[in-house]
Every structure is written in C-alpha cells, then in structure tokens.
Length: 576
Ligand SMILES: *[C@@H]1O[C@H](CO)[C@@H](O)[C@H](O)[C@H]1NC(C)=O
Ligand SMILES: *[C@@H]1O[C@H](CO)[C@@H](O)[C@H](O)[C@H]1NC(C)=O
Ligand SMILES: *[C@@H]1O[C@H](CO)[C@@H](O)[C@H](O)[C@H]1NC(C)=O
Ligand SMILES: *[C@@H]1O[C@H](CO)[C@@H](O)[C@H](O)[C@H]1NC(C)=O
Ligand SMILES: *[C@@H]1O[C@H](CO)[C@@H](O)[C@H](O)[C@H]1NC(C)=O
Image (cartoon, rainbow, N blue to C red):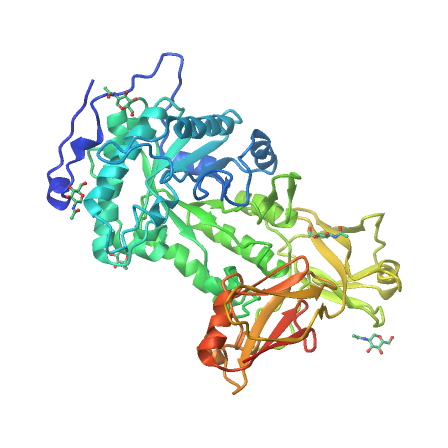
C-alpha cells in the first residue's frame, strides 16, 4: 500500500517533490520479525558508550580499500567485551550505484553486505546507527559550484528509499543517520540540510516496514556543533519517528590533530572552552536527545597523560549535558582488530568509569605551553647513561585511594619501593634500578600498575631513552615534490613530538602567526598534513617541500621527541 504525504513548506522550499522518493511499494514485515518502539532518548542512553567501525564500510571506494580488511564478527565481540554498547556503522554508497538517475539503483550485493553486518551487530545485543557517509565528499558536496541541489535531493531520496526497503524489518536496535558531515558554509546550506533531513524521513517512511517508528539521528551542516546550533530546524511534524540530533566533536583542533606543537591539554582554560562548546549545543536544544557520533583523542597522535585527562573531562562533560558519545576508531587508533588488543587500555577504563559517573585518578602533566619542558606522570623517563634517581610523580587522585602498585613480576613495597605524600608518589632509585639496569635497552621496559579503591587503574610506563639518530642531517631540495623519507634510528618513544621549520632568514616556513603562541608551539608544523613517521623514518610531506621551493630558502627542521625538553631533538636541513 502506498501512503502519500504532502508538505506545502517543503514544496515551497525545494524544487524536488517528495513523492518521487517511492516507487509505490511499501514493505510489510513478516510476523516473525520483532520491533518494539523506543524513544530516541532511550536509544541514545542504550548505545552509550558507542564505537565507530571507522575506515571500513565507509572506505573509498569500498570495504577493504583503506587500512582495514572487511569487518568480521569477532571485532564486535571485542568491542562488546570492552564495554561498548553500540556501534556506528558508517557506509559509503557513492561507488555502489548500478544505474544513474532517476533510478539510482543501488547494488543489491552491497545492500546485502550492509544488512549482514547490521545483523552481526544486533545479534550481539548491540545497538547500531547506519548512515550515508563519504557520499558527502562526492555527489552530495554542497560546497562545489557544480553540485545540483535538486539532483542531490533526488538521489538521497532514492538511496534512502532503497536502504529503508532493505532494512525495513530490522529491530528497534537499528537507527538511521541522514548523512555524515555534509559540507556547507552558509545559512542557505543550512536550509538545504534541514530539507535533506525531511527528504530522508519521507524516503524511509515511504519504504515502510518498521521505519515510521524507527529512531533517526538528524544532522546539521558538517555535523558541526556551531553550524548545527546556528541553522538546524526541527523536521516536519508529520513524521512520527523518534529523533535526536547527532553532531561530532574534535576540539580543540590543535591538540586533537597535533597541530602547531600543541602536545599539552588540561588547563582550566582548555576545560572551560570544551565545556562551553558542549553546553552551548545543549542550551540550544534543551528538549532534544543529543549524541556526539564521533570524537577521539587518538593514542597515535596525542601525549598519554594529556589524553587520559581529555578522555575523563570530555566524557564527564558530555554526561553532564546528557549527551551520549561514540568513539571514532579508524582501525589504527584504538582497537587492533587483527590482534584483538586495545592500544590504550587505560583510556578505555577511563571511558567505562566516566560513563558510569565513577571518579578516576589521573596523572598530572604540563598544561602550561609557555614552559620549555613537558612533564607527564604517565611515564618514568630515564635518559640513557644518567644515574637512576628517585622519581617524583604528581597525580590527581580525585577522591580515590591508592591501594597498591604492581610491576609485571611483583607487588611494590610501600615506603621501600615507593612513598606517597598527598597525591605525589616517589619511586625509589633502588626499585627503579631493578628495571633500569645498566644493560637494559632504550624503549618501554615495564608498565607499573597503580590500583585505586575505585575508578581506572593507571599505568606508569618506565621508559629509557636517548636522542634518536638520523641517517643523514641534510639534503638538497629535490627537483620534484614527493614525500621525503629521512631514515631514523629510534631510541625510546618511537615517534616525534613536534617538528619545527625555520627558514635561513629566521622566519617560520609555515604558519608564521605561530610566533604568537607559547614557546613549545612556535614555528611547529602539523602532524599528518606536514609531517609523519614510520618504523624507520621521519616523513616530511611533499607540500612542505613545495613551501620551501616557493620560499626559495634553505630550511632547518628541528624534530623534537618525548620527553619534550632542551636537547631531545635533532636538526635536518634542506638546502636550496
Ligand atoms: C538538476 O537536477 C534536476 C533533477 O535531476 C534536473 O531536472 C535539472 O535539469 C538539473 N539542473 C541542471 C541545471 O542541470
Ligand atoms: C520498488 O523498489 C524496491 C527497492 O528498490 C524494489 O525492491 C521493488 O522491487 C520495487 N518495486 C517496484 C514495483 O518497482
Ligand atoms: C542557538 O543559540 C544561538 C545563540 O543564542 C542562536 O543564535 C541560534 O538561533 C540558536 N539556534 C537554535 C536552532 O535554536
Ligand atoms: C641524580 O642523582 C645524582 C647523584 O646521585 C645527581 O648528581 C644528579 O643531579 C641527579 N639527577 C637528577 C636529574 O636529579
Ligand atoms: C607499556 O604500555 C604501553 C601502552 O600500552 C605499551 O606500548 C608498552 O609496550 C608497554 N611496555 C611493556 C614493557 O610492556
């Protein structure tokens, strides 16, 4: 049976007539299927905390194209075991259309794959949000002058009608999300996105089955907190779907993406700014369920103590403003899917406890970027060739009581191996000398586990380091730009902390404005976009070589390592 709707408002706003989303067929679900309607607020509470199966079905052009093989059931077991209650399943459809408009027929095999993955998730009792993902980079990119908005509306309707048809009889544990991070910059884009939410709702309602009662997460421009707050409007009241708003949070940009040498986080100002962001969205939408569908502070990019403090504060703040969260994991960040190991188990423990409202003890760390040495109580750093001394590390117990400290092979003896004064722990030189033996290599030698009466256990990584050595210290600017791989022999924490680039005239190669930043950030470039590393190289990106060519000036790179302190860096010069 066909159910038709009309909406004067929509027809006035959009050139596209909503009735086109259906070919007239509505799914009737078999009596063996089950659906028990729930409000969006309950869905969001039930999926919290959630985990993104990132860079997988959303990969361009298809599953397996990026860094992850096709997802397997055991990954969802790993995620459930870690305490996550639901999954966001990003799916890119752009490369799975078998025909052009007006049908926009989606490959049945791809629809089946998505349906099968959803079943793997819900079979484990997990909730799931499925979406239209990197289509927002291609046919649905509103910022491209060539984009025909009417065509985007038509195609999104056809797409969601087919997804809605395929998934019509899935249980209430399956929710839909209009589209991921659709690009836009103007209020006009805001109006288009509001219309796309309505078109999406129309299409899934037309598809029938349980879809008219299904939870949906609607979006604003870019799924960005500010643009969503500015321009989001409620959907047409004729749709009866329980709905909430999904937005994403990767802020502050410099800390999360390791731009401009920002390796610290956690000052009062940092916290106030994060809370102001989350509070502002809640203040705008007091009666609407909210979910942050992507957020992360990746162990690949960020300093450990700062990251644990960020996890704790971000999650408590989200909870304070009744906002659910779903962690982004691109496959290289948190879960090593092949080995089933979590790369940062403490961060997960902080997550579980923060979501429950249990306080976590946390390491202290430098939050003041104007000093020149960065301290971190997640490590006992020992410089190779120096004495093994008593090491004093401050913590924030947050009301918890330290119960014991264990090394891999023994429990430490209080007042002999360590002493506690207030929230400061002193590890004795005699104990540390059992790990930091004269012949021990550089690198992580042991993790000490600090157990508290409640909340997360903390790890202190006993790590010996010396300054890494480069295979060469200079080269001429190559004639053509490709990424420059500089061989390096690592000796401690096998990654750089920051990379500074200064031209022969003393000015910075990129982002000259960083001269106004605190000392540890001046002249530093941005991780990934401008520099990177692997097991045996520092990588200077082609774009940086282009910048040297454009400037026509010999440039000196200072590659800094953890711990960030005077002298723990090496220089490399590219001459022109
Ligand atoms: C935009 O797309 C619509 C729907 O496909 C089509 O009717 C219209 O001709 C297109 N406009 C342009 C300028 O191509
Ligand atoms: C309508 O579209 C659905 C989804 O593509 C398809 O399964 C069905 O066969 C179509 N029905 C007709 C009558 O074309
Ligand atoms: C959100 O709040 C801002 C500032 O008060 C306001 O300008 C904006 O219109 C609000 N947006 C919505 C959707 O309520
Ligand atoms: C470690 O102790 C020695 C004396 O045993 C002292 O000379 C040295 O300055 C100390 N190093 C640090 C970093 O405190
Ligand atoms: C200590 O823990 C870190 C982070 O989990 C890990 O990378 C490192 O290998 C561990 N060190 C040892 C000696 O196991």
